[in-house]
Image 1 (cartoon, rainbow, N blue to C red):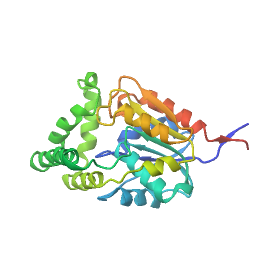
Image 2 (cartoon, helix red, strand yellow; image 1 turned 180 degrees about the vertical axis):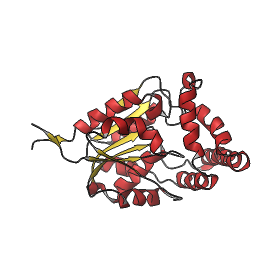
Image 3 (cartoon, one colour; image 1 turned 45 degrees about the vertical axis):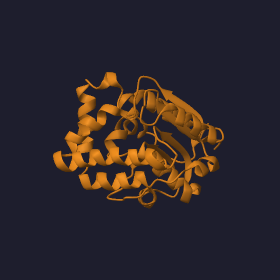
Image 4 (cartoon, rainbow, N blue to C red; image 1 turned 180 degrees about the horizontal axis):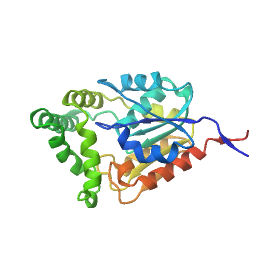
Length: 245
């Protein structure tokens, strides 16, 4: 007979996302786990976001972060690794913003979207943003698109600006990855052009014993694009927590 050592999973949403981005996984896992979703408020740094997640979490928990939420997860691991039983990093990254022109180009691209959000609203901005975030074949899926756009529209341009500042000021987390000693899942949609597979292969290679999961026919919004495949991967990751009674 086996049991799971901890029964709480803390979910960390990505840029402009909320509980809805994890809803398919929460629906599947909630019968076995307490599922908590972090709210970053108006935080404008990854470290402050991590502290907000810690403040609302139990003493021990498993941690799943998507996109910006994966970076928040790594910041949480930087400060409180002893509280984390397992970590899942989905469609995310670990590097600081590139120096020089590459980094400036990233900032210009992000702030161009912010200008649209202030001038025309979050939904209009979201329609442009989402084109690079989901698999091209899913763009005609009205149900999927509406779920993503509605989620974006629940955020304000002010929150968007704060989260952009947090991402542009992100630190490198390579040292954090190399120090992880708990069960680790690194997951990526194969067609994620924003957080590409090669980056996740690098991340998995830095963590001793990490498992790498590649979700086929999916872009960046993998939890909503391929919910069943992501849920199955998370269930396998959580199974690594099974210990003798």
